[in-house]
Image 1 (cartoon, rainbow, N blue to C red):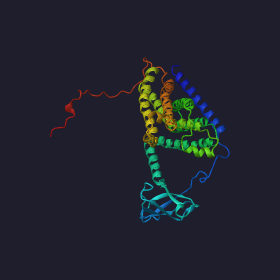
Image 2: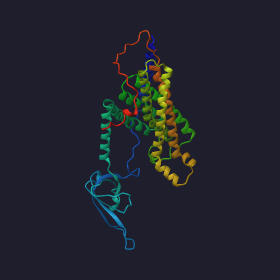
Image 3: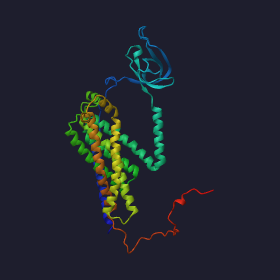
Image 4: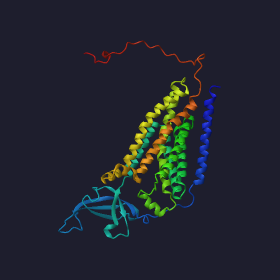
Length: 412
């Protein structure tokens, strides 16, 4: 009877996970985007067509608009347009030296802005470099590295990554564009991603179920705190440039809700890492010492979690700071005080995102550890009257304590 309690606990957690799965599927069916979604053309958004091209000639010549009083030198670039509606045309770009901040050479693969209605030379403008090939190579290297190290687990992790993007692209984004509740959509998408990513990567077992439930509980805490503090700080969600386009063509969007959705989705990846690590720590500690009772097992695993959280929170803060670095530099140049910078909506959003996500990460450690200990830590230690047979190892000869002479180089 001593071992029935953890089995019962594991079954209860399995039923809870199954209930969460059923609710998630029902919720996604209810919230699934149906019909059309807001769609506008590039021209309506103020965008022009992007076409690929290859530089076939680059010369330094006097600018066509130069005068004898102002003899400007220009980079004159000839480009063979290789795609889009302007494919087959030859474009000529002319701009003063270093005007675009880049140097174009023969053979460079670039992207051009193309406007058919513009007059003459103004039809084509330099937009960017083509980056598809190096990014595909990098993605392949990433996949190979993951599979070589993780093997089947790595392959499963890549499959989970693909499914995660599919949920974001086919469910979350269309549902948001149709005006569905952003927080509900984000929670459903995040829960579906957690189910797929965790079970696909780590298998269907008690350990994965515990990590999943720890993730979902922590995600609920993050959602509640986000809801409270985005309201308390009176965020409008309109501080970013992209909202100007969305307000014009997607009138049903709840921009404050989009902030909430972003916080929930952004915290999910780190939560998975923390909860899976905590569950593994509990299981390994238990395997290392089968006589360990729940309380010392919980304390030992919690100590591991504290170290993990200390580094993870620092990583999270630095990641957000790195993403917002150009903005922070602009505000620093403007001479604004630290308080004014931190409480301005653009920066305050990132501060709230970081702090709320960090609280959720901190909460995930004791929650996940407690669930894991409930499953593996309640069985009694082996009966001393009937010890489990252990394989006998050959007796090793005793050696004297090592001294410095043992490590000194031999004399020739």
